[in-house]
Image (cartoon, rainbow over all chains, first blue to last red; front, side, top):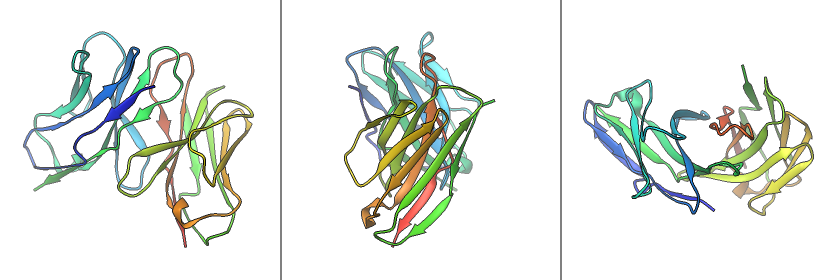
Length: 114
Length: 113
């Protein structure tokens, strides 16, 4: 079975500052990793994903995440945040190949302050 | 393209009343379907998932049940709602055999009063 830990439940940051949202996972098999974003009263939208290949993946709106197998981490970063980035962010893991479900972390509420 | 529909968007129900939330997927066949619940200040809890018609796996025993009467239809039900059933319910789908992400509906905000 897989598990995901998001250590920070809330991250306040000032506009244009950098941010890192931490995600660690546990699995006995190879995994695929995902970051989702959720705006208030909406469903989850995929932000980025790691399936294989380059360990650094990027989204179209400036976020990036790096898969670190030795540290079992998949931290999300953005060098300069905007007010519109305020949302809840979920890290998720899926066992490669055979699993049929995603396991989610508990979420991190990112609040960008003016 | 694939789309997922979930309704209603909001629902206020009295304690002890029944519940039926519906989710349908368009543009794909034989999806894996999921019901998640998101309580205030908490993450996503997987309630049920289904890999085919009539096949339901329950992750957490509780006051709810799920059914999949058609390939692309997934229903979440309760015979008698409890106050603790309040929350944000999300339907999602993935495609088995292709290791892609899950696609989510817009959610249903259920308030049991």
